[in-house]
Length: 463
Ligand SMILES: [Zn+2]
Image 1: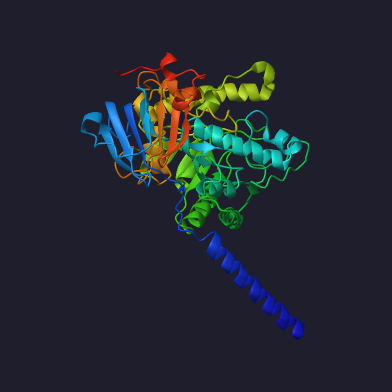
Image 2: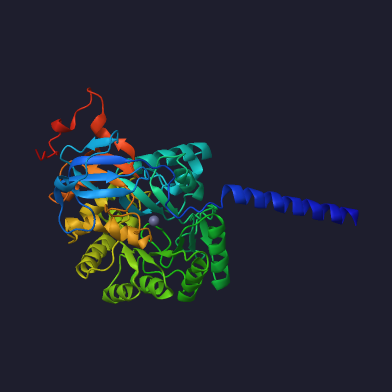
């Protein structure tokens, strides 16, 4: 009896301690993608693309207050006088754009080796160091907000939020849910099970709910599921179907019951794309096999397509690729280019994502050039990676455009990306990056030994 009482008291004490910790540590009223640091900032001598207007403002000024919130963005001639002492950037005739989004990254994955190789050959400390570097590199390439769809613990998001780590504002799925033998099954052909903590297998509605709840417990902002196999997996195919529609609907319901969170579906083949949209997902990731029916359904349900074209346009080297993979990839690359070009022509909701981790990190904005190659205008490609992405991630009330009242997440690109969208693909052309008015990269103020912008042929001066 005494023992029971004692353990009961201990349990109550533990519970109170836990509640105390929860109260102080994690019950902050932080909305997804918030960050703590903010600063006043003024930018002048720039061409402005604000993400909303059809045309650029040739000579513009942007000003943000101490809260990092934009108070003015428009023609220099109508700009208010600069407040005394405000941090000011002379953009030297470059182009000022909203901070970009990459809605499909895997910052925990190396792009120069496979996840299998990483799991076997890299120790945990080195893995953290490499991930921290990737976050900074991604930010410096112009990505001020990103959605990570698997293999990144939520603590990285929290470290960015708290200012402990430089990186894009983050939404994370933490893990990926598929059925046994599906796209997220980390059992190797040898039978060796790698037991990746970010891969969760679920084979009926009950298990899907449980898997989603585990992801939510681990801090997921979005639930990532698979409704098809993949191009790069040896044992399945994009036309193989993964979760059933009722299982997709269960994941969608579970996410909805927890703060109205969305679900993103890895969906490559036609059948799995339709299953995902019918089940109620917010976004179809990849969507390589999308057809007219898929485009219509996407429009009806107001869902988004994230075509991850970097995976498709990446050069394919026959000598470095196994024969089965080479053929599969070559075939699907062609199918994808045709289907996504049609989806672009039909003006479906497209948000930008690269699958960085599978493709190289830090070169994220090359995705815009690929969208243009398949028929998008440069302005629409910029919108796909700014306002449209912000809308998909439900942060467009504060991010994705440079208008008064929005947060001053911005980049300055040397030259005019409306004339040449490829300028954005070169990280060195992204000369300034700021989040909420806090400057994260400023290649304009480097020392005298560094080449100045005037020496760079890509820069067009307005004066
Ligand atoms: Zn992916």
